[in-house]
Image (cartoon, rainbow, N blue to C red; front, side, top):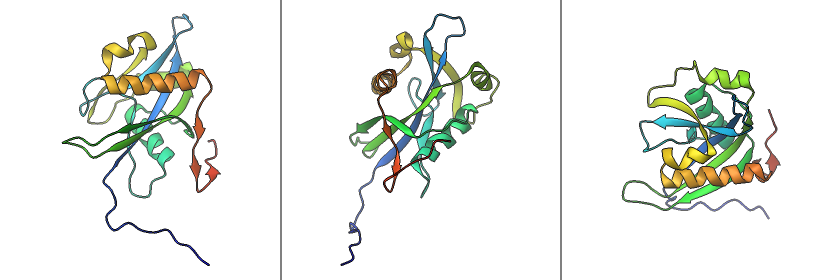
Length: 170
């Protein structure tokens, strides 16, 4: 007996966001880490680089595309650090935001960000220390980054699967 997925007559409206959590070590040698954030014209406060997927675009590739477009960095993204659900509001449908581990970039990779010219809609890029995040981010964005940071520090995270097969690294 063949089973096929049931289609719903009216699929729910939902936003799917894909963001990258990228760190660098303090170039001053303190041993602290800084997270890469975007100053977008579309959000209050700074956010992780990212955005929505296109039709039939794999989720990790959407995160990678937005990371490259917004920052100039090209990194493999396959581990999900956190998933953040946002209920619908008057302005937006409900949403899920997936935060992927971008890892710790080398000083050379971090140097790509400084001269990079972000696209229209991105005012600037910033490396921000964990202790200063709450000052530069909206509360929901701050909590999302803090949860991703905690997962990264503890080696937690889930591999992204496509039809039950882990996405390859690279």
